Image (cartoon, rainbow, N blue to C red):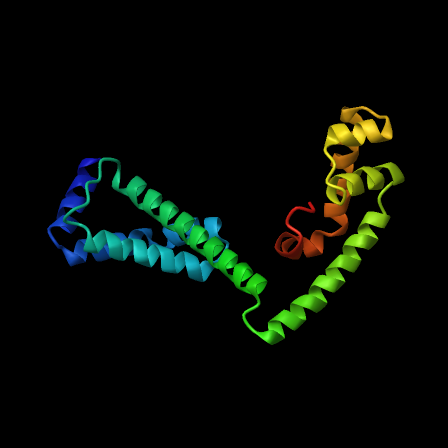
Length: 191
C-alpha cells in the first residue's frame, strides 16, 4: 500500500469516522458504477457498495489489507456483486423448483395447461425439422436408442447421426427459445 493509503487504513482501523466518511464519499459513486456494470441493476449495485462499506467498518479491527486500499475496495465490491448474482440464481432455482412442485391445486391446473401447450409447441417444432434430423431425434429421445444403434438402424455412420442430432437440437432450441425454461422444468432430457 502507498503511504497515504496506509495512513488512511490505520485511521479507519483506529475508528476515525471522519476519515471513513471521506473514503466513503470518495469511492462511493465509482464503486456503484463498477458494481452496476456487474449486476446491471443500479439499486442492487448501491446496496452492494453500502454493505461492503459497512462490512469494512464493522470488521476494520480484524481485516488485513495487503494490497492497495483502492484495489481492496474494488475486489470486495466485485466479490459481493458476484455473491449477489449467486444468491439471485439460487432464488430463481428455488422458484422454479416450487413451480415444478406445484404447491396448490390452482398451480397444478395451470401447469397442466402449460405442459399441454408446451407439448404442442414441441411437436410442432419437431415436425419442422428436416426429415432425417427428425427421424434421428425421435429415435434418440423417444425410442432412447444410442447413436450406434441409430446408425446401424438407419445404415448411416455414427458421425452422421451426431451431425443430425446437433442440427436438430440447434433448430429446436431456436424454435423453442421462448419455452426453454419450461422445457427444462417439464422435459429436462429433451434438449
